[in-house]
Image 1 (cartoon, one colour):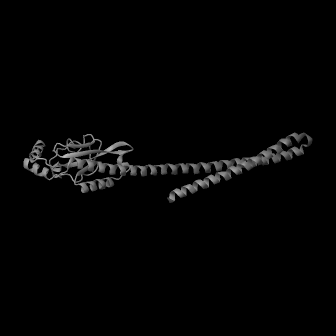
Image 2 (cartoon, helix red, strand yellow):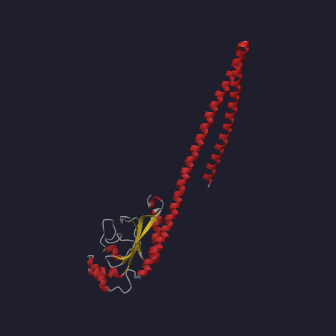
Image 3 (cartoon, one colour):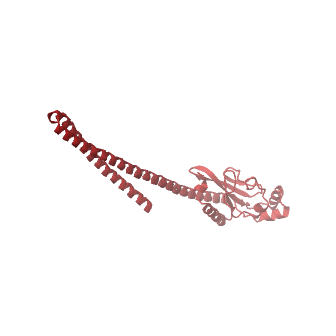
Length: 259
């Protein structure tokens, strides 16, 4: 199962955007190969203009980290946090793009040059990055991933519930179909039983006409008649029980559809 099987992209984007607005940090949701799933939120001017793009669309050196906080090639602090579905990582929240307090202008300048950005333009772009201590970035990242994982778990539970409803509806439909089939077959057997009873009556009449020679045959005919009558009663009882089952299942279906 994939993340977008249980949660809509616009809902994921909205949560990410709210996080970026509340913290002033950048954020984007990526798959396990680093490809962007959402549109980036609050990306810094430097990262949008000068960052070296990898084949997955993200900055080279970003998104290929172990979960946690790290310094990117531009000298900014980033975070990488896994998002889980049923306990398994399905994507990650990547973001940050913040400078640490006291980070020197020379450090910014060298970072810009190392990425091939024009010195002054790159320097000015890096200086626009939000300033956050590592502790604050780490706390914000953990809060965001906890909120998003809770949302994923909630949507997953709803998806599983809907799947169970579909299976239940199918099984109810099968039960109704089988009950109807049983009733039809029992009705056919009841018809056979009626024919057997008629045959036993005719046999008894013929045995009576045969006199003493037909006494034994008459006894057999009488027993066949009693057996046919008993069978007919049993079949009628089964039909009535099947109707009760059919009605109960229909009521269950109606109750489910009204929920």
